[in-house]
Length: 166
Length: 135
Image (cartoon, rainbow over all chains, first blue to last red; front, top):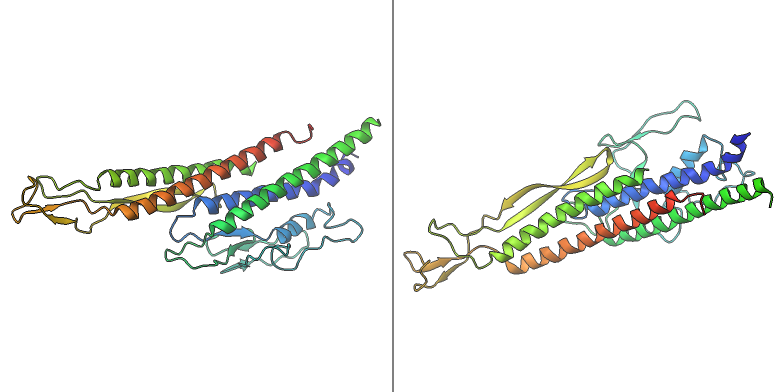
């Protein structure tokens, strides 16, 4: 019974967790802006979110009457971003069930489907952090984090209003 | 609360950048130092950054792995009247390049500001998350 009440919150909760993860990644990139040889990482948010919510069956991406969110097959899902993300040296584990999480192992043993940002300008010390891009992404991500938070708050409020009946 | 790690990451970057700023200050202060009686002039110091994993592999902070001295020979100026002059009448100054140091300083201060901003954003987002469901 309580499950049905909280199921609708699951999707936004997943999205919020992923936003926090991405925020952390971008913070690492900004922190390492002057580290020689550091490669910037980023995630394809739409794909990661789809993977995270696919198994649970909760949320508008998986169900909602067969209606899917308009996300692009590649890229970051919004047409405004021109970042090229690429995967390199990645081995994927084959899965035998739809409920399995897809695991991708990077060359440094890091899991998750993290991508590498394509550097716009090459750097002599091998660092691929583009500060303009990282800052734009960071602000973009924090605004979207806050938006997700508001959606979540709105859902909670709607439910509480319904319970109170006034 | 994976965002709490942002404070560790940005904090490490801030401390690394402030150490870089410290060496810049030390280099600039010694830009006109002459060689002592041992003939060794001040050598410019540079920091070397290295990314370090914090917790998991994707969360990477920064640390200063090494502070090395620039080994290029110091500037030599002919000034026989100077008490610090050697037998040939040359005074050896430090090998600090002030222009390079100023550029280094601006770069360090910008990176520092960026990381402070990251921490402020993370803080306000976390505070809003703490108030989830209360408004």
